[in-house]
Each structure stands twice: as C-alpha cells, then as structure tokens.
Image (cartoon, rainbow, N blue to C red; front, side, top):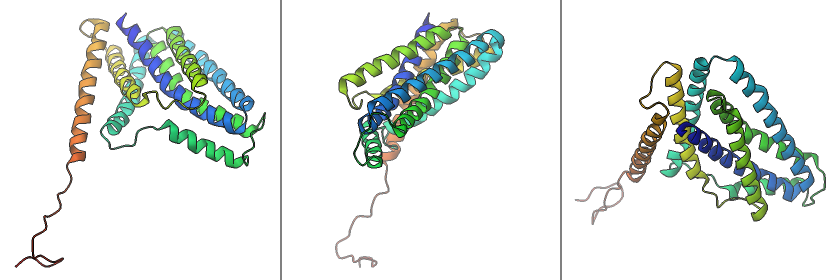
Length: 262
C-alpha cells in the first residue's frame, strides 16, 4: 500500500510540475497566435504521449523479467530524481534562479507576438507547432516516470491515471486564471518529487539486485525521510557557502590607495 501511495504522489507531483510548464507555453501561444491552433497542438501532443505509454509500457510489463526491469528502472529513476534534487537544492540555497513562469510567459508571448505583428489568427501553423512541441517535450519526462514506476510495480494503469488527473487539474486551474500559473509552488513540488523518485529508484535498484529491504515496501517511507534530511542538509550547507564571502580589508586612517599607512 505504501509503495502505491508513493507511486501516485510521485507521478501526480511530477505531472503537475510539467503540466504547469507546458500550459504556460500553450496559453502564450493561444493568446498571441490563436486558441484553435494552440489547443489542437496540445491535443495532438497528449494523444502521442498516451500512445507512447501504451506502446512502451505494456510490452515492458509482459515481456521483460521483473528483476531486470527493476534494476534498469531503479537506476533510471535514481538518476532522474538526483537531477531534480540537485536543481532544487541549488535553487533553494540561492545558487540558481528559481523557475519563473511569469518570465517564461512574457518571453514566449513577446516572441510569438512579434512574429505575427500583434495579429492572432484563428488557425496558425506556428501556434500549433509551439504548443505541440511544448507539451510533447514537457510530457516526455512524465511518460518516462509513468512507464518506469507503472511497469516496475505492474501498475501502469494507476500511474497513468495519476498523470491524467494532474493534467486535468492543472488545465482547470489554467482556465480559471486564464494566463499563467505562477502561484503554484513549483520549486517546492520539484523538491518533493525529486526525493520520491530518488527513494523509489534506490528501492527498486536494490530489489532487482536481490536486496531484501526490512519491512519490504515500508522501507520506502524510510528512504524518503532519509533523502529529505540529506536534501535539507544540502540546502543548509550551500546557503552557508553562499553567505561566506571574502572580507574586504578595513580601511586604515591615513592610508592611501596602494600605499600602506605609516
């Protein structure tokens, strides 16, 4: 049960993050190039992503040995999770700028608006392409997570349902705000999802290699707590490094530039 809950939360959180980024691009394309083209591009990308989940995930479940699948999936999730955690730690500690949907929306809108000289058409090839590429590229990471977690636990349907729920929720919120989703705590969600993916990756990597975790699936919450503590310690350490700067020499009365005081 604990593994299923973590699976749903990890897929739902990752899908929310990527959906926010994709929807920002779709809203910008719709505002400047025309809603029909933007929505058609988004729909085409979602259909392609759904086909990829079915075409790749189902064969993995039925034809790949479970231990081999868990080793590969575990390593993949661990790498992906650590990548998310690295960026989250750098952003939380001030070493990297936080993801700003307002800035992305403004930049995309300005770029597309200039291309049309301010005229939004009902159907437009550029608007379709921008929306399609945005949704497809952001969605590929979700597909990877859905297939990895779903196939390794033989719960592809559950993982896909969690991703679909996130897409629907973010889309509804996007319709309500009619612009961008800058209020969504995306960087916090990325930190949580990064911890979950890393924990799942280590767990499945061990399972596939023959490790028998104490408590079986109950080891997953323990791993989540461990990686959460490590992440918090990493943020604190990076913040302390950022706060330590070379001190400027104090000025001495009577000292001129380049000459020591007598």
